[in-house]
Structure formats: structure tokens, C-alpha cells
Amino acid sequence: MKRLLIGVPFVWLFVLFLVPFGIVLKISLSDIDLAIPPYTPTLEVSDGWAGVAAFFSALDLENYIFLTSDDLYWKAYLSSLQIASISTFLTLLVGFPIAYAMARAAEEWRPALLMLVILPFWTSFLIRVYAWIGILSTEGFLNQFLLWTGVISEPLTILNTNTAVYIGIVYTYLPFMILPIYATLEKMDASLLEAAEDLGCSRMQAFWLITLPLARPGVVAGCFLVFIPTLGEFVIPSLLGGSDTLMIGKVLWEEFFNNRDWPVASAVAIILLLILIIPIILFQRNQQINKEAQQ
Amino acid sequence: MKRLSAFNVVSLTLGFAFLYIPMLILVIYSFNESKLVTVWAGFSTKWYGELLQNDAMIDAAWVTMQVAFFSSTLATVLGTMAAYVLVRRGRFYGRTVFSGMIYAPLVMPEVITGLSLLLLFIAIGMDRGVLTIVLAHTTFSMCYVSVVVSSRLISFDDSLEEAALDLGASQFEAFRLVTLPIIAPAVISGWLLAFTLSLDDLVIASFAAGPSSTTLPIKIFSSVRLGVSPEINALSTIIIAIVTVGVLTASIVSKRQITRRLQEEAQAG
Image 1 (tube, chains in turn purple, blue):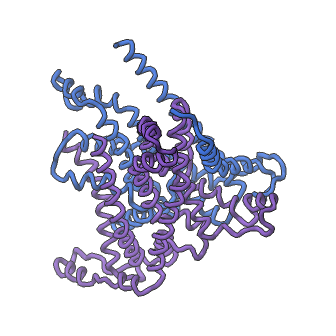
Image 2 (tube, chains in turn blue, orange):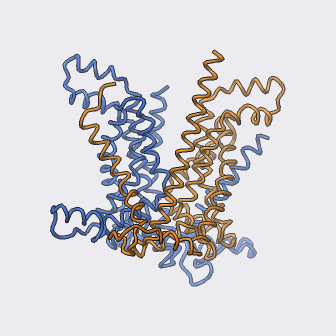
């Protein structure tokens, strides 16, 4: 019984999660070939040990050397890191005041407010990104509105720029930032603030000295929850970004589907994973510390 | 709790306006007569009519529903098993690898998951189609189910299960009669989460789908790349309506259950 319970999900994940990674790693060391499948070498088990030896000796780091020699990939990795960092910061700026206000709202209002934050999260991601195309385009609603109010006299170009990518990321990932911050602020003891004010703190000082440090675990968790998925984001840069918006998820997609260079696409994937390992480990550690602090 | 300051009220108003106005515009302009999406030309439901005539869209919607149903059901079974093993079964050989494989897909970029699964399907010579999309979706959504179910399993008292075992229930009976009813809300919300994740997925489905099996997000993406279209607005409105009704119903039902449980506990006490 126990074996079955462990075995079934274990085998499933082993075959459909771990083994595929081995294959990606292997193909990243292979060469592109005009064949089906379009890479070489393929393992010839029928040749016995000679086949296995020939297989391993044909693997090399050529694709990785290619990635370092071509500017495109370096720039794509750096620009992904930059876009992910800036948009995480912007999401924090937008999300914190909302989470803070939610935590200060009367208790009977909170479930409804929480529902309002969660509802967009259940709605299709693709549709939420799509909604911004109509708003940000040259003849879109934002430009119509700004022209009508007289703030601008010429329509702004926002769609197909990095600005549109930032807006799209903040919009779609906002719930991931609000929810963990709200969760820490909601548990905060309000009497701490009263004590601080009784001891002569101004409201602003109390916020900086008490609320903010106590909200830190939520802020850190929220930032990672936005930063990690944004780094490999594909949909937002390809729908809202322009041709000069470089993000590694998009590069991988184009390398695979447009250039059909599977070995290079696999090498891009492996490097993206290596870059992601650091924030993921930091995130795990943060969650662990929070858990221990709660107990 | 103190009253909300003016700053709090402003941030809530602006925040929710930011979250909801884009979707509201989409819904309003799906009833626009004009083909030009950003120019209002009178009320019309003609785009809904055209959507119903669009056989390719309907086929894609049908494929998407099938994939979502089968993958979320499979993912719920596998994810619940995994959660039960991780929370209840203590130490076993390979536990670290096992829990690593449960958490890793949650933070994995979709492009990498999709690419690796496609390379697997090709390496074993599997034809891509509905089945491969179901396998791919089950793999990542079972991890979400497992996280949702484990949080419920951790919070409930395992002495209840031990009592059932002491009273002569088999392990399977103890699970079915004691544990399952208690974790049922988490299992259901895990299923719902898996279902929506599958409905929504573009990237992994694009890698796992063959030429003959197109899902709705793949269809939407390829048409949206060419620009905004009123038909997609109509489709988006239908999806938003279904999700809103679904989420609200689910939350009302679970709220009722909680109040009923509290009442029962009050009576028992």
C-alpha cells in the first residue's frame, strides 16, 4: 500500500519531470543536424558499448561556447534580469499600499477585498495581457483619454516598448505581491502601533519603525513570487513588447520554433535554470525562516 | 481597528480600478458594432454570433475542456497521493528527491517545462496530440494540487486517523472514511486550481500539442498576435463570465460549509 502510494506519483514525476531534464542537458551538448530528430548524435543501443562510447565522445560544449560568443544571448539574459528586477520593484510599489489598506480595513470587509484581489488571478492570464493591447496602442483607450483631457497633443507610443512590458507584468503579477504582504500585515498586533504612538512616535515614524520591519517576510516572499516567474516570461514580452524587447523566454521560444535549433534552445534553457537556482534557494530559505519564526 | 486614512482609501480605489478597468473595457467593447475595436459604434451582439459560427474556435474550446477535465482529475489523484505520502508517511528512501520534484515544477519557467516535455515525447517517439497535452498538464498541476492538499493535511489532527486504525479500520478505510472527508475541501479546490491552470496554459500546450490538436489559448494567441479583434473580445467576455460565476459560487459554498460547521460545533459544545 505504502509502496503504491509513493511509487505512482514518484514514477510519474521521474519520467515526466526528471528524465526530460536529462534529455535537455544531453541535447544541449549535441550538434544541430538536418534530420528527424534535428540533432546528432542519437544513442544507438544496438551497437553495444561501441555505440555508447561513440555517443558520449560526440557530445561537447560547443553550444555553450556559441552562447558566450554571440552578444544576443548575453544581452537577453541581462535584459531579462533587468526587466524582472524593475518590474518586481514596481509591483511592490503598487502592491504594498493596497495590501496595507486591506489589512487596515474593517474585519467584515476583508473577505470581500481578498476576493477582489484573487478573482483576476483565476481569470485567464492570456486575456488579461490581451486587454492591454487595446488600451496601450497608438489609437487605444489611454491615448484617446489623454488626448481628450489635453494632457498630450500627440499620441504616445507605449505598445511594443519595454514600458508596456512593465505595465503588463505589474498588472498580471499584482495578486502574487499583495497576498503575502497582506497575510503578514493582517497578523500584526495593532497595540504595537498604539504603544509606539503613546511613547511619542509620529504615525509616520511608527510606520517606518514597526509596520515595515514586521511586513518584511511578506515583502520578501512577494518579491520572489514576482521575480522568479517573470525572469522566464514569454507571453508578456511577445504580446506587449517590441522587437527590441529582449527576454530569454522569448529567445528560447524563437530559437526552438523559428530557427529550429534545438541544441541551442536546450543550452539557453540550461543556463536560464542555472541563473534561477540562486533566487529559488534564497526564496526557500526565506520561507523556512518564516515558518520557524511562526512556531 | 482604526478607520482607514484618506491614503488607504485612495490606494484601494486606484488599485481595484487598475485591476478591473482593463477587463471592464474588454467586456463593454465586445458588444461594439464596429470592427474597429477602439471606436464605439453602437450596441451589438453580432461578434458572439460570429464566434459561434467559428468552427475552429469551437473545436479548440472542446479540446481545451477535455484536456482540462482529464488532466485536472489525474492531477488531483496523483497530487493527493503525493501530499499524503509527504505529510503522513515520515521518512522514506528518496524523500528529498521526491519533495524536490514536487516543488521544482512550481518555480520552473514554463518554456523550460514545455521544451523538456516535448523533447521527451520526441525521444520516445510519441505522437503529439491531446494525450501529450494531458500528460504535460497533469505533471505540473499535480504539484499545485499537492501543495494545496498538504497545507490542509498538516493542519488536521492525525490522531483521528490513528483512532480509526486502532478501532480496526484498514489503512485504506481510515483514509476513505476519516481523512478524505476532512481534506475534501482542499482536494476540491486543488481540482479547481488544476482545471483553471490547464484552461489557461499557452506555453506548455504549444510545445506539447501536435498540428491536429489546438487548444483555445493557442488559438487566441495566434489570432491576438495579429492585433485586437472583436471576436476575441467576445470570447474573453464569455471566459471572464464563467470564471467569475465559478469563483463566486465556490466561495459562497465554502462559506456556508464553514458557518454550518461552526454552528454544529457550537451546538456540540
